[in-house]
Image (cartoon, rainbow, N blue to C red; front, side):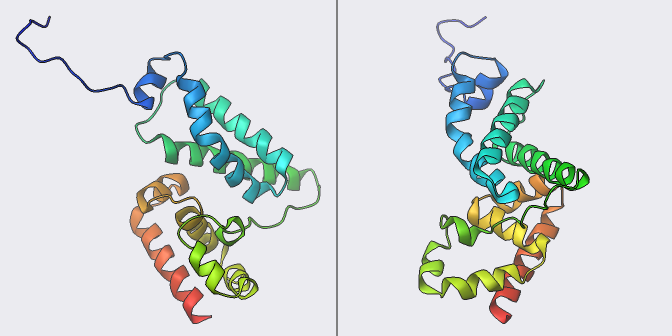
Length: 179
């Protein structure tokens, strides 16, 4: 019990706090904040706008229906999205449907820290260099520069140690420069 002389906690509840408390409007705020990025991210795996919209919706439904919400919501959502999209791609291949193209890279989105580089470099040459990288290298580059995730967040999304993410980023950038 607090008394008049004890300071009250003036900390405003975060989105995570409100989600955990199932506060009114928290789910709408989560959707408004993360849906556009999740659609863009899913499109990269699925290559189809309607499928990306559906996938983002499925991811948000899964996240909002989860029994607990982690402190790091952003990488958690990307991890759910990545796993969901990989499952959709695998299922499509198992059913014998046409294989989807490789995930477009951060170069295609024209957002993030490399926008100036894309404008300065010949776009086709840069795209060819990125496409020459392994899937693992393209994926970490896209998460870092296209989605603006930190190395720690990427490690969480890909379920890798941060040291491996750091190494892959270094190797990918070195190969881009050396190609």
